[in-house]
Image (tube, rainbow, N blue to C red):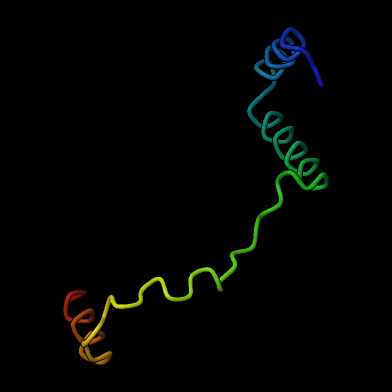
Length: 74
């Protein structure tokens, strides 16, 4: 891992690159991070969402709710 001084040197070198080359560098770094598993996108566990809306529509007819939403969009 680079020390703070080394990191500053790298940042200054990056600033000298054209925006196109900076973008290429970002893409390469992102690719490297994905390979290491650090930047892996986590999958959403839908089971954790079960029951979150419980009671939210208590006593309300589902079709009435949908109809009201549709009216609000107009």
